[in-house]
Image 1 (cartoon, rainbow, N blue to C red):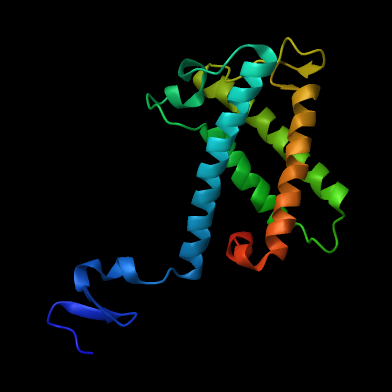
Image 2 (image 1 turned 30 degrees about the horizontal axis):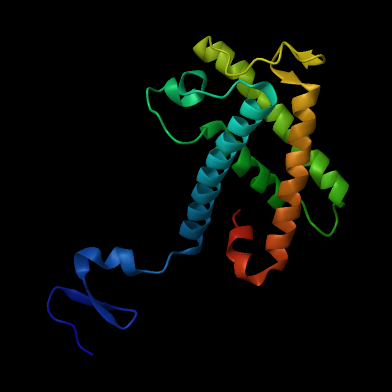
Length: 183
């Protein structure tokens, strides 16, 4: 099969040379970046949904655009970016841990503790840079400056165990192998 002038043969198809980049298979580094972007958006969306359900059902106080990070940048998006960063952080730490050497209970505690530390640092940075508190746990019985609390920290650790279970399942499932080789 020979292609006309201005066309290039890719995967046994003749495609316009200007559009050839779209037909190429992704390189390993491009695939890793794409996986990170997918995890970021999925985590940001799921985090926003879970927070909405949590605030609506348990507290009777639903999250609104005016209370979230994305309004600070005058952009209304259907997700909370801080959860996206947390999701990428969880997968990054999960990849650093050797599944054969690190026990399941230790993995969950390491990832959960990292999320609590991330929440603390994010809250301190947001307060310092934007002079705005993104969340306030002052009403919780055990809290540190209203930025982190024992109740929410336990929820982060539980979510870390859920992610660990999902990660280990994905790693064993050959169909999801490319998503577990992100870093």
